[in-house]
View 1 (spheres, rainbow, N blue to C red):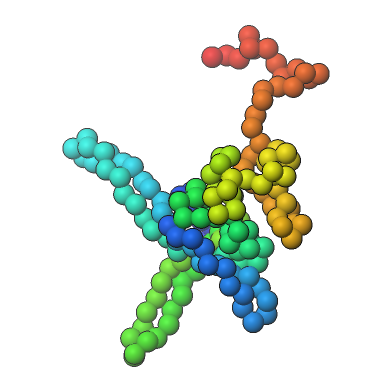
View 2: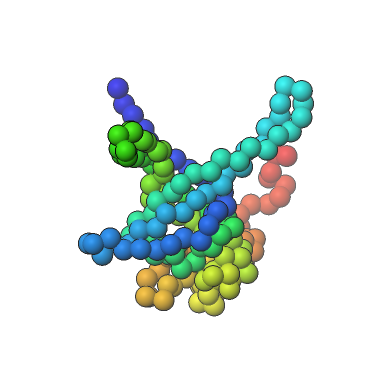
Length: 162
């Protein structure tokens, strides 16, 4: 039987990430993510339900999160589910978490950034890509769309069927 383990979550960070390094020198950080779901009950009443998810980030992604993500930051995480099991005081415990393999910062200008200071000037000038202090590129939010540029025709509005 085939299996598929992918998770995509969009939510707000519940606490400031604490970056640490394991013995091999690899960066790791754990973040909490609050994901909201709004649905209508059988009586027609809207209810909002929040799910809290623990996410572990590794390597460069963990370093970027440690520098640019703060409590309340909206982010998108793509990764996989992992079940941790351990025994404490003779009792077996388990916890399901997400191992984040990709992170997208979603805050606009003035949101997020290095501890709430907005995106770095170099990131703004690059139109959505920034350079971390170590010199490595990392993705920021998508550049603002200014509409079709001159010199190319995307099509006339009359061609749109709606």
